[in-house]
Every structure is written in C-alpha cells, then in structure tokens.
Image 1 (cartoon, rainbow, N blue to C red):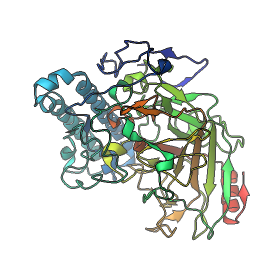
Image 2 (cartoon, rainbow, N blue to C red):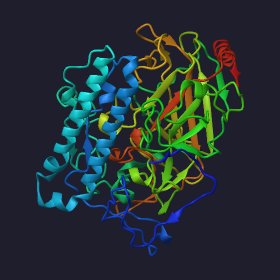
Image 3 (cartoon, rainbow, N blue to C red):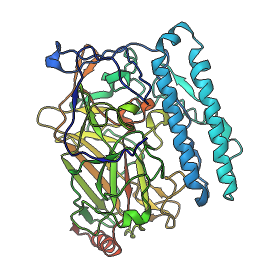
Amino acid sequence: MGRNTRKRRMPLATKVTAGAAALALGGGGLVWANFYASAHEDGGHNRTKSRGAQVATINCPDVGQKLTKVPRKARRGVAKELALLDRQITDAYTRLAETRQAQAGDASYVDNAILGPLKSKRTATLDRIGVNINRAGGKAPRDLGRFARCQGVPAEQPGNGGGQDQDQDQDNGQNQGDGGQDNGQDQGNGGQADNGPVADDFIRIEDVQPNSRNLPNGLAANGDGGSTGSFTTECGTNENELRNSDNVIVAPGVSNGAQHQHDYVGNQANTAFASDEDLANGETTCQNQGDRSTYFWPVLRIQDGTQDIDQDQPGGGQDGNVGKIVAPTDVELKFVGNRTSDVVAMPTALRIITGDAKAFTNGLNNANTAWSCTGFEDRQVTDKYPVCPEGSSVVRTSAFQSCWDGQNIDSANHRTHVDFVEADGTCSNGFQAIPQLQVRLVYDNIPAPRIENGQVVNPFAVDSFPEQLHKPITDHNDFINFFDEDLMNQMVECINSGQDCQ
C-alpha cells in the first residue's frame, strides 16, 4: 500500500451514473444493493434509498481510551496494535455490509461469522498489547481480554453506546439527548452507500433552541475576568489541499491510521511518520513563521453523486468515505485566556485532541462538537448536522482543553495530560491554565441538503471510521504546538495583559 499523503494538483471528480451499485470498501469489492443515482430525479442529483438491516453497525470497546498507563518505550508499539484493532473493526464492518443476504437467512450469522472471528483477532492483538507494556517495564491490566468482545447494534438502536466496557460502563452513552439514538430507525444505515448519514442526522438551524447545547466539554475558557486577551494566528484554509488519512498523535508510524482524510493548515510536514524534529523544521502556511504548529480536522464531503481524487484510496472510498471534499472557506484560529487566572506557556510539541472520532459508539464522554450556521451561532448542536437557510453558511467550532498537568506533552490515551476548565472557569487537580485554542471553520460552499420522503438528498458529512456511520457527533480536532519560544511568550503576555493580538 502506497503513501496516502497528497497535494491535489488538479480537481478530479467522477460522476456516478444511473445504475451504479458498487463501492469498494477496504478493497473488498463491496456491493451495496440500495445505492443508486438517477439522472431522472432532482436534476441528476444523487438520492439514497435504504432498507432495514438486522444489525446496522459494530460496537467495540475503545481500548485506547482505557490504557492510561503505558510506558513511553511501549507507546509506539501499542499505538500500532491499537490501529490494528481499528482495522479489524473496519474489516468486520465490511463483512457485515456485504453479507446481508446471508444474515437474513440465519439469525446467528453475525455472531458466528463476524463477531466471533473478530473477538478471536482482538484477543490476540490485546495479548500483544499486554506483552508490549510488560516488556517496557509497565504492568498491563490483567483483564485486557474483556475488551475483546464486540456487539452488533440493531438498526433500531444505532449509537447506543454498546461498545463500552460492557460490564461496567453500560450507562455511558445510553439514552443521551445528544447521543444520536433516534437515527432514522426505518432507514437502515442510510446515506450514500448505506453508510450514513440519514435524514434524522440533520436539523433546521431555526428549530434549535438558542443556548441549548449543554455538554461538560468544550466550555469556552475566556470571560470578563482573569486573563482576557486573545491571540489570533492566520494560517490559511488549506489552499495547498494537503490531506492524508494518518494521525501522528494517535497512530504514529501507521499509514492510514485514521481511516479518514484530514485537512491540514499550519505545519506542512505532518504525516504518520513525522518526528518532533521533522515538525519543528517543517514549512508552515501560517503568516507568522514563528508558528509551525499543526492544526488538522476530518474533511467534509458533499454526497451529491460525485467522487473525489481518493475514491479508490485508503482513507477515501476504500474506507467508506465517499463524495466531493470541500475545504473551509474561512478558518479562524484563536487562543484565549482563562476566566480566573493568568495562563502559562504551552510546552513545545504539546498534543491535544478535542472531540472523539468514535463518539457514536463510545458515548458522550469526550464528545465536543458544535455545529451551527452563520447568523445563528447562538444555536449549536452536537448530534445533528445543521440545515442552514439561504444566505447562511455551515459553521464548525471547537474549544480545546485549556488545563495542563504541567509536565507531559502527551499521555498514553492522549487525554489525561490535559483537561477542560470547570464550570467556574478554574483548572482542577493542580492543573495549570494554558491558552485555549478555539477553531472556527466556515463553509460557504455547502448547499443545504433536502429531506424528501424520509430520505436525505445531497447530504454532507464529516469523514469517519466506517462503523461510525458518518455521524456528526464524531467530529473532532487536533493540535500540536510548535510555536517558537519567543512567539509563545508574546501570546502569553498578550493574553494575560488583556490585549487582542495577532
């Protein structure tokens, strides 16, 4: 498999013609019987039908989130095994999707032919994770094997959090207002190629109540007290069209570790194989060359019957991400202060992930999605894509964790070294306040989808792992700090003194 890093030199899109019925997913030649495009309907736009399925998707425990104590020497090896767990889920999901006829004739088919073999593969991989940890001088959890079992999620109950520990986290992600439970029960998986999104994943922004989004994550740290300044860095909108399906934070050394495409602004050296030295010396799209940080997020695609340059590539069509990629037309990268205290400088190479690419099956613990429309940004949703009125544009915003443990630039699960502020704006557990990154992405180039007869026409969706069904709640954002020391100190001084700088 070749590298999947690309800068697009010319646009390439292929119109899906009437009668098209096959989409390669994972190279398996997967046939989706309910995918079709008709030149006779809606002016040639793609419309999607769907049918009920006994099992809509596969829900597995997110092992990476459970491993909070992994010796540094073992982390790269463990990361590769975790990426293999993700690939095993994708392969099982592919098998699930291509055997619908067999499932219809055998109620035990999914358990025997898909979930059983998946458990065996996961058991072997989990054993290797334990060996990696123990050989590096750590102590692997004795009960790692309990994370081997996965569940099939019925079409009536997608997103029910069944991939939790399964013996202790059963309430995590269950029956949550933002959890995406009511996802078009009569629509199968929906979306283009039956892999989402469905009509129920969308909501008219006018129907969202102002100031109704209520998540513990993503609290804006800035306010009218403490350190009230801001620092804005201008890094473009990915005019270079630099994208890949790697994730150097979660899956270093693994090509296609994310299984979905990312847009990159800032640092141009970001691949799965980039070292900190590579990133520190990389070129940057930021106007201030002292900012070589890397900012990246999953791309948005319009499922209008056209395909993009990666239609046959890992991270694209091979992993169920189909449609035309659209880059944001405006990117705002702003760092703000803390409501109750000064902020301290971020350490070089600090890594922060906000949101959760697996929130559809994991539940809301790490979800941090804010979808809205220009002119309506007091109305934000987590588990829906917004349908914006004419003249209004889709907006994605992320407010990053802004409390740091004062020691580590990363942690084993890429979460515990940073935290969100408490409701009163303070940092708990002895953590220190750092500048909070707030990312605002605006898309002037996304036409509003339509809902007709319970089906979504020309939907847009965020790239995701296939089994996450392109749910809006899986949106996430990544940052690695490579501000030089002088510029970082300027940022801190600016924020703490109440100035607005760039």
